[in-house]
Amino acid sequence: MKYTLIALFLIPIITFSQNDLLDEIDSDSTGSDYATAAFKGLKIVNFESTKLVAKKDFTFIVSHRFGSLKNGIDTFFGLDEAVTRLNFVFGITDGLNIGVSRSSFLKIYDVSFKYRLLRQKEGGFPFTVVGYNSILINTALDKDNLPLLEFKHRLGYTAQLLISKKIDSNLSVEIAPTFFHDNYVVVNEQDNSQFAVGLGGRYKLTKRWSLNADYGWHLNRVSNSPFKNPLSVGVDLETGGHVFQMHFTNAQAMNTNGFLGQGTGDWGDGDIYFGFNLSRQF
Image (tube, rainbow, N blue to C red; front, side, top):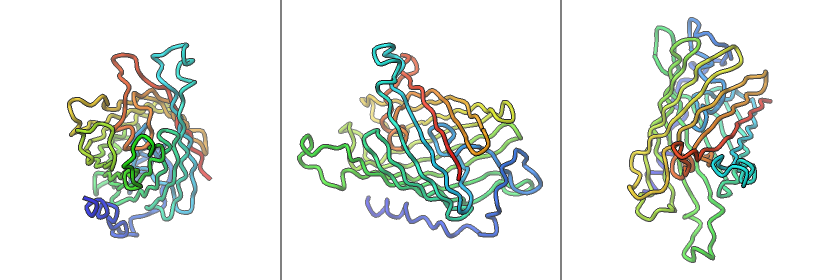
């Protein structure tokens, strides 16, 4: 299995044509060539979007999830149980990004690569296709509670194919087939290797506001698992160099393995989390 995972990380990111990696203009028109600005944020809500940071640009993203609203005033509607993720993304080229992040959820560090394979073009290919890979380290696992714990058990991996289509100037949709692997899983019967399909979209309400939503359909979750499929709904506000995303979700974790594999909230019970992603481009 480890060799399969290594192979996933060595997807040849240099195979896509450099001639296709034109500078992305952040406009709302599909124009006569490549569709642009299908998504304004690097994430739809939880799932990665097909947007990339431009060459030599640097983007800093602060993601925050409060605790469950269900507990009400006891936790000040989640304020007392908030978690934060800091993510730094750099554009090596217009079609290749590298990211480094740290999340207070399970004290996770991760490194990610995001790379464009194909672009939607009017009269040409109908979709934008982007690959996304990450490796994470769970530093919260405690050897006192897990005496057989080794460093390899802290590792997790993600491989995604992000496929989006800008249908018109207002509506964009995405599907994200996802493989993720955790060397340590909380539920003993759960396979370490897990599969999911993400579905998401963005609908522009005004020049600066849009409605966003995404959902993760876990394909091999065991029947006795306490975890739920993540459903997230929110709005984006674009203010020049900032994109401010506000949303409600039933998954407090913000890295892919976390929100797909360890989401505990339930919309039916009102067990949901308010949160935001704030990105600043430099």
